[in-house]
Image 1: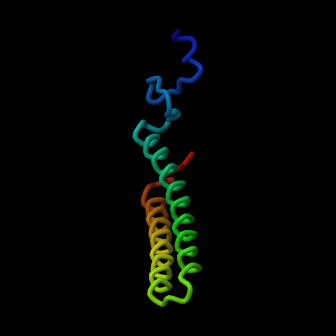
Image 2: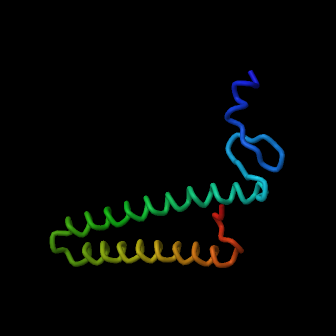
Image 3: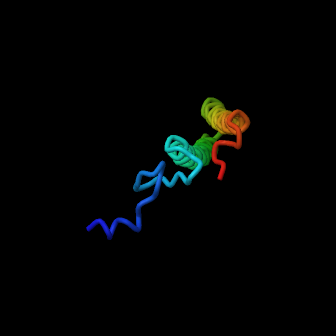
Length: 104
């Protein structure tokens, strides 16, 4: 049974793992950090687009109601601020860590 899963195994610090292939020059925590950040980047992008779409639908369906239009505009601004904040955080981490977070 071990031979079946051997083709799916990766190496991380000399230990066989199922998900993370650290390579020879990276320890396990950086592999996990890179995987988590990739998932976070994807989620932030998807949720940001979903937030803008939902706020746009709210704005369109406001039908001239000033309170509903203001609420939709505020939501769009908050989503954009969140996306910019995440982008700045990612840029700061790229600058802070030598070689960048997701260096190959």
